[in-house]
Length: 377
Image (cartoon, rainbow, N blue to C red):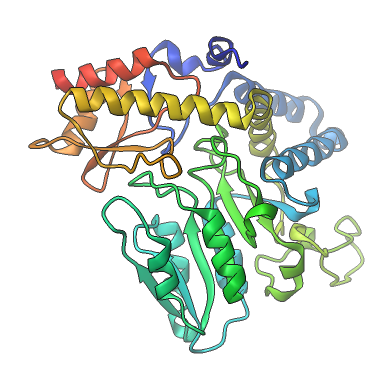
C-alpha cells in the first residue's frame, strides 16, 4: 500500500499552498528539482565531456515513458517539447487527400483543434462533435464519421469539463472504420493507466507539466511502428537520421521509428527532470495514483454539494477524472479563483466554471480549505 504521507514529502509546494491546479502547470517534486540542479552542475563543471552519462539518462527516461503507456518498444517513444508538436506530427504528416476529414470533439483544448483547422487549404474538413452537457457520446462521434474520415483526434480527459473519454470504445470504433486514432493524453497520463496496445492508439502526445509532474517543455509522444513510414516526416534535422553522429557524411536515411521526429538537440535538463517525476509516479503505481486522485475528487464533490456548489463534471465511474468542474450560482468563476489564490489555494477558472484538480499528494484537509475559501470569498 502506498504511503501517501511519504509521497507528499516530495512536494515543497505543500508547505505554503493547497495546490489543486494540476490540470494547469504542476509544481515540481523535489526529485525533479534535484535533477535539474544536477544537470546544471554537471554542465557547469564538465561541459560536453559528460555527454555519455546524459545520453544514458535519456535512454533510461525513454524506457520509463514506454513503460508508462505500454509501448511495444522504447524506440516507439519520442521526446517532444509540447503536446502541440505531437499533434502537428500527425496533422502535418498524415497523407491527406482533398475531401478527407478529421473528427474532433468541440470541447477540445485549442492545441488539439487549431492544427487540424490549419489543413483547410489542403482540402481537409474538420468535423466538430458537440458535447451533450458534461459528456461526449461515442454515438455522436460515430455519427460524425464518414467514408472520408481519416483521423479521430480526442483527449483522454477533456480539459474544461474533466470528462474521461471511453478510449477503448473509440479505439474499437477507429479500428472498425480504418480511422487513425490520435490521443492527446496530457490530462490523463500520470493518473490513469493508458495502454496504447490494448486501446489501439496509433499516436499519442503529452507534455510533462501537468499530471506527470515534470517541467514545461519536456514530454512524450508515441507513434505506432507501422505508421512511421506512412507519415510525412516534419521537423527533420541532424538527429532524425539513422547515423546522427556521423556529422561529415550526408546520408538521408531516417530512423525507422519515432526517433525521426527528434530532429535537433534534446532538452536534456527537462527530460531528465521529467524522468525523475516519472520514476516517482511509477514507483507509487499509476493504479494507486488513480485510486488516490479519484478518492480525493469524490470527497471534493461530496463537500461541494454540501456547500451548495454544483458539480458540473460527470462522476460516472468510467467518466470521472482528476478534474472537477464546479458551478457557483451567482458568482463569477474568475473572482472565485482570485479569492482562493489570496487564501493560499490554487485552482483555475475554465469555461465560466471553477476547475479543481488535486493530485495524489493532496489531502482531504486541503479540499476542506478550498471549500472554506469559497465560502469566505
